Structure formats: C-alpha cells, structure tokens
Length: 286
Image (tube, one colour):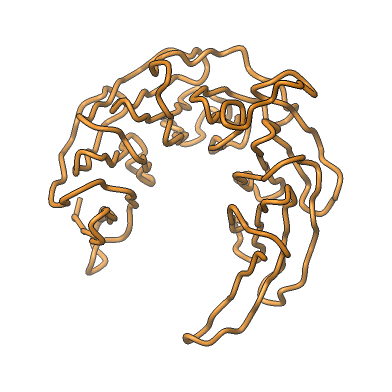
C-alpha cells in the first residue's frame, strides 16, 4: 500500500493512500498539488490541504518511475519502465501524447532493465525533456509533440550509468527559445558533460576520480555554476560556460549522495548543503 502522511507541528493531519507502492513524488510549482507515481503503473494527484483526489492517470503498462510538472505547472510528464513517456493535462485522464522512447511501439522484446526510463529533466522554458534509460542512453524529446529530437548526445562510455540530468538556461530566457540552453549529464565513469541542446556539441567536460552521484544548478544570478557530488568524497563547483573548476569542497569520509544550494546561515549569500554516506550533512558558504 502507498501511504503519504502530511504532518503539522509533528502531528499527522493528512493521509493520502494509493493502494500500491509509491515510486516517486512531485510537488506542483505552486505547491497546492502533489503527484505520485506508483508500482501498479498509475499516477495519482491530490489537492492540498484538502487531501481530495484530483485524478488517477492510467496509461503506463508498468511501474511509473519518475514524473515532473512542466515549469508552468499546466502539464505533467511521467515515465515508466515500459519505456513510455507521457504528457498529461493533470485535469484530464487521457494523455496529450504517449511516446515509446527507447523501443519501437509495442516492441515484444522490451527489457525494463535496458529500456526502462529511470530519469527525467525538463528545460526551464518547458520545451524540451531529457530522458535516461536504464541502459545509460540519453535522448531529447519535444515536449509539445512527443517527438524525439535529432540531436545526438554521444559522450558517455558504453555501460556507464547516467546518474543525473540537469538543464540550465545560461541566458535566463532572454532569447525566448533554446539558444543558451544546456544539459548537464553525469555518470558513473566520473565525468559530466555539458551539452549544447541545439547542436549536441559538448561545451565542457567535468571530471571526478570516482562516479558522480548528482548535479545541482545554482540559481540566478549564478546560472553559469553547477556543483557535482561524487563517490570520491568531494564536491566540485564548475563554471559550465568554460568547464573551469571554481572550487573543491572536502570533508566527507565517503560517498556524497546529494547537494543543494540554499541561503547561507545568517541570510547573506548562498551555501552548499551536502549529504554523505556516513550520515553527515555539511554546509559551505559560497
């Protein structure tokens, strides 16, 4: 059974149930709706704080592995180990489109461990999605139509697992299109590539000595910065315009599993907050 519990002042004030195991959660950009993908291939949406079920979406055939609202909040993208990517109007139980990404339609040789979608990112303008397969492939998809883009992203070695996908708009929407939009993909080979979305060209290569576990983009006005976390116990901050490393952050004793950019203690500037395998979070002012 999938169960979400909303708490206030440490007391349970809301219980949301799906009837099956929940594999992912995603908040609406405005914060009043939560979506959940489930092991039985359904996607549930609830209104908060009422807890009312808004919709149950059923078009995947296997476990839904990841989902994201588009930046406008008007649409929802969901993906599955059945290799399908679906765009929804959250108010409508019928998909806007459903597209098989890593297999032909109704392919009898579907292998979820190879063709299943395991990661998803959406560009800041909501026009492009990046999807990763369990086998390590990365493809770009036109969000409006569901068509795969011709842009080829070839850089990670065969057999590597791509662990993170992050879009960055270096021009902060100034052009209204995809000029200046890059995708950062990080993998178990210890490298992250910065791709020009329009051309597929590698703009920069970022390296650790061990697998990269995650990447986080810095907010405006430092849109040119990302920080990578790694199994080598370090975090590194990079200028993705040039690939220059701006700093190395040390202190963890094992794998660094997560990193976020937050207001610095005292409210002045920004800080990096990291989470390590040894059960420790560290904070660096940047």
